[in-house]
Image (cartoon, rainbow, N blue to C red; front, side, top):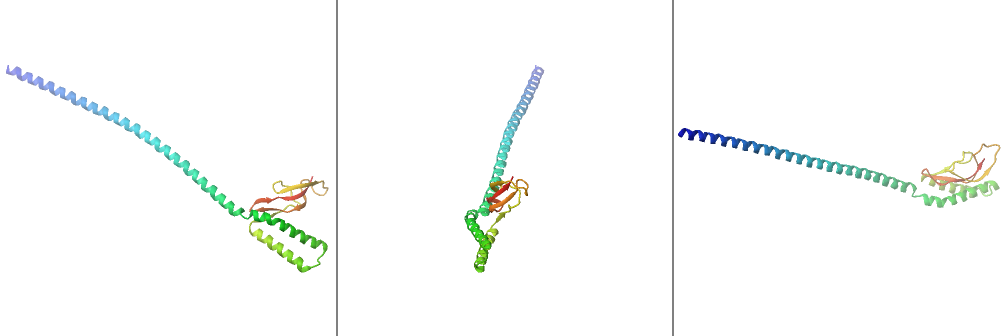
Length: 192
């Protein structure tokens, strides 16, 4: 009987060992499943975070590009303000320049009665034109040039045998540009 008891104990021990081994295998399997589940959750979380980072990075790039465009636009506007700040003043002075040029023309036509007065008017006119030129004013060359609607304002047309069509025959009022921008087109007569 003792042998039976010992065999029985051995069988029980073997059963216990097998059960414990099965239990340990099940625990390992559960740990592996749990680890795989956690790894999958972490991968999903990592993927979401990477998508968020990508979205934030794209927003940053767009905002950065918008800011660079804004800075360029502000710099251009600032530059334009400096370039064209004198435009209104120059436009108001141009009729005075026209009148001085007419006075010099009339004096030249009628003859030089008072040389000092004529010289004084010419000097004032030249000084005024030089000052305006130093501030970006340029006269638009018109006489004999091809008609350009961007630079010239045609007030008359005339048939001409000597000139080819679409040429400026006469200038009634000089035109000017300020730093490359037309502030007053030339008033002209054009051939057709």
